[in-house]
Image 1 (cartoon, helix red, strand yellow):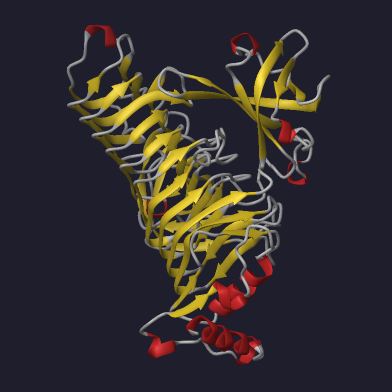
Image 2: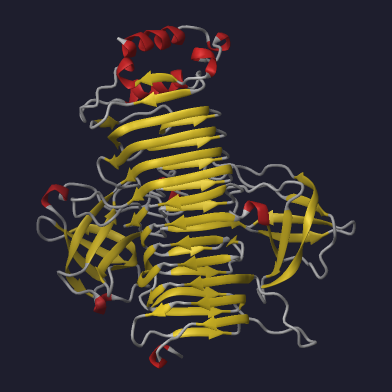
Length: 563
């Protein structure tokens, strides 16, 4: 009776002209309005398209605050349609909870699950997402013909009739890739395989993969032991058709008990948010019990330009065809240093604009030596005209900033970024990670179990140059991303100034304490490094500490581990 009554309230509200609809605030705004999926005709039988019913439910919920969207548990909601690609497309919502009840949302590959933009105080909890049909086909490498440039692959019987391969319209003629999977020392390893063509084989269930001419790894592919994931139409490899879950320009978002089992592009995009964002037991992995290889065609979490405090707690990341985490911001390049002390800058990557704000700390780096020029507070920000959109997405304008104090030696071509917009408060705690991580922002890893490369590096496109960094009480093993090394901190050249002094490094303040390390460990060109209490447990693995400044090394390593 309660659900039915609430359904009548909301359906009645739908008949009111939009300009006359006031926000619904039951009980004086103290207790949330419950929007029950059953009141809007959501079936949850895994067959009927629940998309139209969910769209009506979302439209009603956006007029209420606080509000909870509630789905009955232990059901499968098939969604084949949505008004704007995203099933839960929420813009400007405040004090909203989406409770999936532990149910699974099976969605069409042209759709995505959630997009939150300009929202505040949002909780998403207890749901799983899968795609039907899947955005990939897994197969077993059956034969390899390096001379002819062919890999023969056996796919399951149920996949024989599916179209495989081909870039989407977004990518034009760009090549696409498959992902080869093999066994490594501590878990699966993988190799990208850029593909010219996929065609039917000579017998049922066989497909022929023709890699691009650059592929040279045929000798290492053992038939029957190596596997491959192949894309199906709908996969894009450049700008992509959108992440499965987008959190953009929001404040205070919490996601808890979520599973993403397959995603045609990024699983999560987390960009330019404020406040606090928490991901608690949020897993991106192949669906348990299925034997699948892949979970997302690109990054698990693509994290850019956040001012928010970011926390991942107890998350599982595996099966990505790119990075588990890419945590960075979009750096800009100085185009001109003006006579009045202002600096004209252009964001290096045109999409995902990271805005400057007065009061930001601008950090400048010489891209050749990868050393800090200095930093100064921004007093004034002037944005130029917005350029034409790219693939329908807004592009970054040119920006002129005035600095409180000029930075000595700054010149055109220098790389700059806002320290406040570079994910400065980021922590990964008790996470299980089975893929490489690109970590280009200040970050703390605590008690994480990693099989893959942790890569801290200086890049002029996706920046900044990370520091401070803390990795403590973690188990780190080599695997995906680099088959030899588990940690690489690449600060680049550290050639001193003409007077013999060494300017500050762009990578700085790294602490590795009480970790168990299996694999190569490289720290180069970093200022202020502390190694304390780490155990290097793989015999013969190299430990390279080169050209660092203020190194404190209190680890005891077997002589075989040194180089």
